[in-house]
Amino acid sequence: MPREELQNLALRRQLFFPTAEIYASKPAGFWEFGPIGVRIRNNLINFWRKELVERERLLEISGSVILPKEVFEASGHLKSFNDPIVQCKKCHAWFRADKLIEEKINKHVPESMAIEEMDALIKKHNIKCPKCKGELSDVRLFNMMMRVLIGATQSQECFLRPETCQNIFLDFARIYKSSREKLPLGIAQAGSSFRNEIAPKQTLLRERELGQMEIEIFFNPEKIDEVANFNDISDYKLRLLRLNNKHIAEIACEEAVKKKIVSGKLIAYWLARLQQFYEKCGIEKQKMRFRELSEEERAFYAKETWDFEVLTDLGWIELVACNYRTDYDLKGHAEKSKKDLSVTEDGKTFIPHVFELSAGIDRSFYVILDQAIRKEKRGKAERLYLALPAQLAPYFVAVFPLVSKDGLPEKAKQVFSMLEDYKFSCLYDEKGSIGRRYARVDEIGVPYAITIDYDTMQDDTVTIRERDTMEQKRVKISNLPELLWKLSVGKLEFGRI
Figure: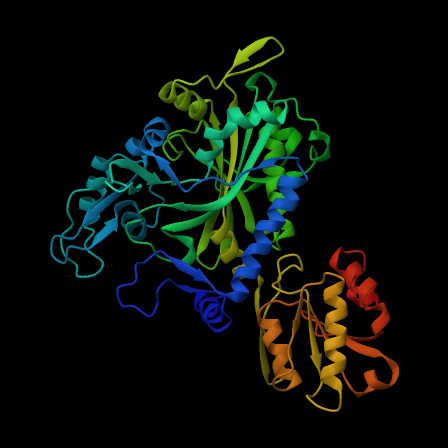
């Protein structure tokens, strides 16, 4: 589906829109989520929390977005968290050098490529300013950290965090000791991070304030193959695009470990759980892949990286960075803070290693919408709807009176209240024709709609309609709670009602 269709839907149905849009001076790269968008976004986070955090018995924290300068000296971000940039000598516009080159030569350019090599490519392909065709400056590195000065005298230099995981590393020792857990220990966090992008584009795919859902698994590197639940996924096939390969291969987790495609069972297990999560979010398996990154492409802290990507109208979009960070982070913070961050287990003292699954909330939100949007013709009419999984939809069920008279609204509100008492997420609407109301809830992805009509007043039955097929069934009001519950947990298919 063309991205313009999704962006139009986003504005029309209160999904997302630019921050401070009434001002001409609004900064790029910042976005608001409207009432419907917030519900879908929150459902995505809560579903991640349920499927990965709670089911895997991870611990969750919520940390500050502002951290002292020393944290990022220890983490390496003040030295290495850079983007290559160029400036037009004529109109003075700034651009990401690697992206400009990619667009010109139609080939991936690692952002870690030496700036001398980028300069050579710009000259070789005669790349000019895309705005005014002016000559470009030499490439230089730009640090993306956002600086904050604290206190009345602004004497304490801090930074907005560029990734949520730093809080987790800083809190590890306290959580490990107080929780009485053993390794492997997973700690998770969902929240905002901040990156001073040069030219944020493509709406939610390149932001300056970005949502992240991150999981950090701390483990003993000597026990990377000791995974309690590995048999649950040993035969599950990962979609892997390995280095120097042009085609995706479906490889069972057990095979990926035996052939040393991944560093160990712990890595394979978490890649599988992540892929399963996004399958449940409604993304087709054939549109997923884990792309292996070369040493030149990987982040400065990573020994092994698999980028989880989804094929969209814009091409392959990265949603999750899966990084084997070794002991880089804990060792760096231990040295800088002069605190002991080692653990002792089985008589051995060591710095734990870390495997990370860093998911973009807003990128995932956007791509899930991209995969869910449908446009179809039924006769002369054209219908647009979001085929969202029920667990991500803004509401599970809508309740409509057929008309706004003859006691139907009052009866509909009784049904609505009853379903709310049973904790279903419900929407009530009595404005406009029934066809228009169906169209409105279809566009925001509500799976089911219940209509109260004149027959309801006689026999206490209602019409329940499914979003995707538009099929309708007649059911008793008294049966609705059990019926909707079975639909919500997958114990009943609509066609079998």
